[in-house]
Image (cartoon, rainbow, N blue to C red; front, side, top):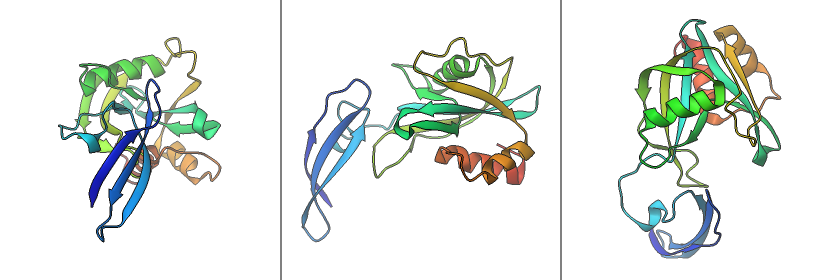
Length: 191
C-alpha cells in the first residue's frame, strides 16, 4: 500500500474531509475520503499520536453507580447513550480535559483517576480521530448548568441491573465504546 496524494476538500473549524489517492498491494490506484480533526492528518506526517478527545467512564463513589449521559447527536438526528466526552484543548493532559468535560457535561467532580488508555482510533475506516478512555471515580450532585447551548444532555446514574435493562432495549442508540463498557459492567460489575 502506498499513499500517492492527500488533498484537503473542506475547510471547517473542528473537522475536515480529505481525499486520498493510493495504490493497493497489486499497484492499482484507488481513492478514499475520510474526516480528520487535524490540519495535517496522520497520513501526511509521522508524529507521536496524541488524543484528539477524551471519553470519561465515571463511577460515582457515594452512589455506587456508573454515570452515563443521554445526549442529542446531530448526525443521528436523535439521542444516543454514551459517556461524557470532549476535545482535548491545547496543552491539556487527558486527565485535565476529562476533569473539565465531566464537570461541564454532568456537574460532577472527578476525584480519582483509575486508568487512562493510550490514544485509540474511534472509527479508522472513516476518520483518523483518536480518543483516550479515562476511567475515574467522581462525586457530587449532577447539574446541567455548564452545558453549552448546543448540548442537550440528560445525566443518569445506573446500577448493573439498570445497565442490563438498557442493553436489552433494542431501540436505544449506543456509542460503540459505551456499549462495550456497559456490557462489561453488567457481566463483571467493574468498569
